[in-house]
Length: 374
Image (tube, rainbow, N blue to C red; front, side, top):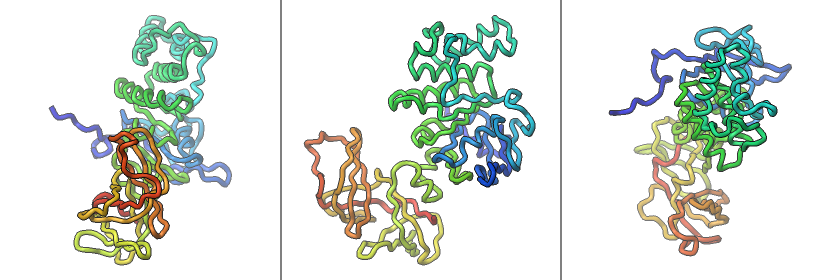
């Protein structure tokens, strides 16, 4: 049976769970959020991604009710949140510090909010047991936070946040305190838990890899605005600007002028360098300034000149970054432009043919790059 793709944002009949409508937030003279409108749907894992100071945490704090919009509206499940205090919203927030009670056991930490609401004891027991199972913490129920690892503390905070079955869970840099390996494992756990509970997750992160791993959609932010919202694959393969292309992953960016050709554009770019060819559905005026963005893994590298490549340039290897499974070659072209080519390490180091100061050819197809206006 064919699996249906989860994409409520493409369905005109779907009503969003969260609506930002022309929201602006100012702190004195500083505009943190600038006339922002965005819909987020039920059961989404929505990532707000951007550098420090781009406004992503302010957006989250307004959703939670800790900040009030200067202008505009925020609706959750069709209800305007103006004047609704944080504890009356169908929202829970998990903070970067986890904020666990050190003197309470894991079990008691998870039960805390339920008991405060006056839930009956047997219901509290059942709910906490369910949360412990979901986050695989049954063995640690009696331990205190200081007796478990950082990754386990992170899961306790998640279990406590989900115990009250919020419609919406906000996660502020939730994996910031974890080491790289644990972060990776926990990202997949988060996705698994989100899918099992059906809760809508909104995560704030400056870690592009994290956003690309967990999110159904990523909103890339810059200076209080959302620059592009799309699935991780679209953000990576079809960025709408140099800013997004540059922010997500590694990229080579070549500035030039676009000239229409039979099946795309010829790009003139640096004196003495060959014309580059790009196929694109976008339209550029003759001679219009453009930016060619190409990912390093789409660039081939060879000692001999390729005979059938749509695009090829010559340069010298200046540096090699060995990343275990991949090697990234930094190649300096004749005009001084630096380009990166990335290849999978299928051979042992001693058997590889290319090394520092070698003269090489870089090549790529005419569909590999994205042509951008700005």
